[in-house]
Length: 172
Image 1 (cartoon, rainbow, N blue to C red):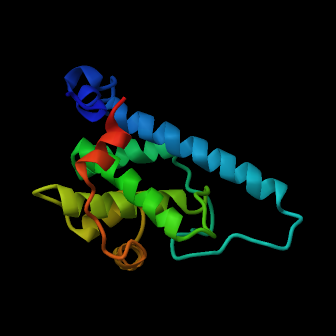
Image 2: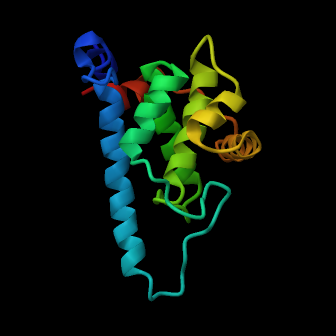
Image 3: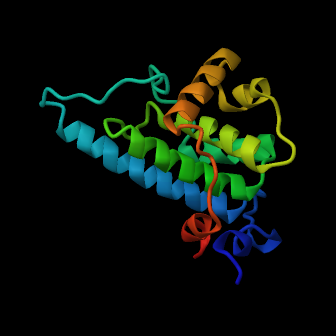
């Protein structure tokens, strides 16, 4: 049985930019989640409850869209497309464990680079250094090191993704 990832990561599944369609679909899914969360936050501005600020929050929104950011990471990090699926799974696991947090314009880019870094280290045979990923992601190496540790502790270092779980995300 062919998976969604394998169907959408071959030469015919790349866009003119060379970015696999899978990366664009991931960007679209994440952008939709962020837009929904930003609407909720805007509507709740009058309430006293605020989202928890974490190490992943930046002081302002990056200028790159989520799609541009993921294209950049794909181009320079050279990690496998399966890393992007696994990174999304890790991101969901992190957010499930951190119920008070949601993806927003202030944290999405940092959470994405961290989840992709962790997925690449776990999934791929070869992986660039944290310093390299930090440059690609637009953060300092020290920040990325701290974010990676925070992310791993919240995942309780449980990085294994079963075939069934992977297929549930990757089958289209």
